[in-house]
Figure (cartoon, helix red, strand yellow):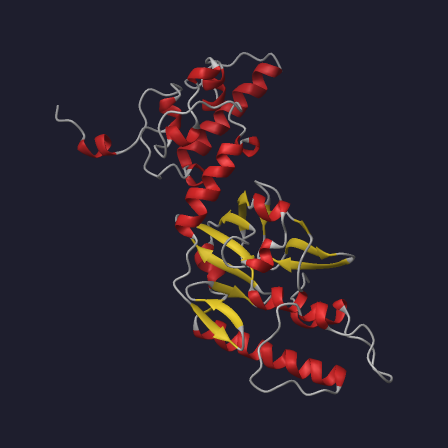
Length: 314
């Protein structure tokens, strides 16, 4: 029998590397969340575990299946391979965290140093009255951007307009790994002292990664909204349909230009002071507004700005 050259060029599936199955190769570049085989194996293993807890005899072809992580956990710590080694990203390294990657400093370092800087590089930026708009990103009218990665994965963040409008954020509350997102529903709430604003999700999917740096330092959103300040990664099986509802390229530019014009008109209406023609939006509009304006005109509140320019969940 001739050797299967295609299989020889493919890496071994994690389930095969752990010894749970005899022969299985990875066709998904270790994108397990989108793998039907991984979902099926996980479902069988969970069912086996539940039956064993209830002391019900487990029979059938998959009776001996256990999760690949559980199979490797019985190995001595010094011989447990790090998942990044199993995926071929690095040389051999042990896993000291029993495959709880969310608690692993090296996993965080790997994503920060290798993944983000390698993938998150906009092709270029458009300048819309001082607002940066990256080419190739999709935009939701609620000022949340979408960058397509691969295999149904997207990266999400807050755009430069919202950052300049509201200024430095000091706290963020959002979904954790595995949580579902729904287009048009709240995705995250950002705080500036006692003020808060919620942003809606531009896509429907499942959270696969949360930016740990932004969790610790929310001001990164303002410093680099389209790169280091990203919020989430998500897997979106219906991405093609979601993108039809978003703005892209020329429509993004037109929308951002109209938002800037509306903002200047809003400021003139509230302050009776005409905005400078051709001027650029400052980096912290809210922080530079007067608390109380002369005469009978009230100050421009946080609530007024967010209600006018940040789309809220219906």
